[in-house]
Image 1 (cartoon, one colour):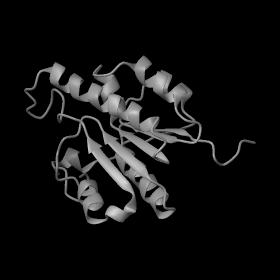
Image 2 (spheres, one colour):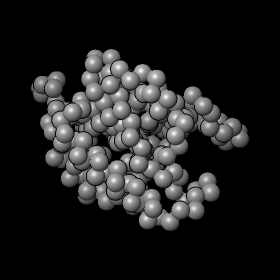
Image 3 (cartoon, helix red, strand yellow):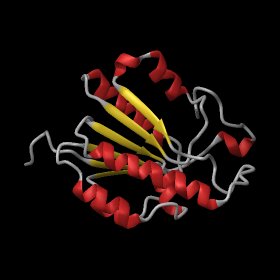
Length: 180
């Protein structure tokens, strides 16, 4: 049996809702134990997310959020060249690498990194290298649908959210406090 101080690689993936929400729940739990958490958002760039408002309102929570995305890639009216999205994701990964080895954090959440990998904005091998070389006591959480098989293989815990039913099918758009 391994000690409780073993840093896990955790993956939340699948087509169902709740991947980022689960990771943020873990951030809140860690914060409750006075642990420092960093959330690095890939893809997302909207400045009005509820989680961003929370960390501004409660700075003592020890949760930081850094956003590196350029928004939706190739959908919902995105007209940016893929290189813009790729450059943003690479900057996010470079920042993540620095923070992973800074030893400042109990947990680092790489939000929507699986989507960045699926869209080939980042290379799977670059992320695998980080996962395999992370400090032993750091918890890394990776979110986003379509986690690559190689990522799943090195992870310690993988949860797949499965969509059974979603209000979007009835024309209900994303709502404040639920999706963002």
